[in-house]
Image (cartoon, rainbow, N blue to C red; front, side, top):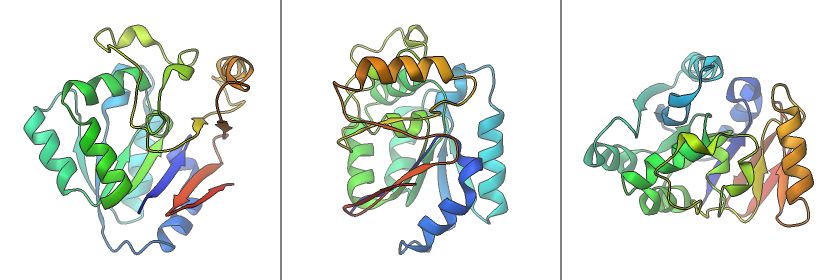
Length: 204
């Protein structure tokens, strides 16, 4: 069953990740680390911080850029993974790359049935049914070939990362005001996480 860890800033939630990992039956030390969402970001220190943190914890990272690799390589790496970590960045660009390589169904199956999933910011948002709600925070024009905003549909709520955190204060306020009565938004700041272990959902 699902084992999901959603964070706004991976490096800032190390202790909570350790606690979460201790509650799973995970014995793997290899993580498939998907960097794609950061491709179109000018600031990527958050990803470097997350990579360093995971490596300091003893994990071996196999990096995958879905946009750069061919479809077969992406499929094989995701199919074989026992732990998948998707770094933050532009959610629309990330979803576009996933759809272009026909990975949506495979990823959904892996997350629901077969692997432990860590989603940072965009990596958490794509778990939702639809990512349209994050447009005030992410530039949709960076994904010109994305035909629709339907996403993985793994969770029945909509994570809102970086809640009242610089430099996203105004965008997240706008998203919250526009969508708070339309969808089940779950805001988290950079120190909070959402964890799902089987059917047990916690926000702390």
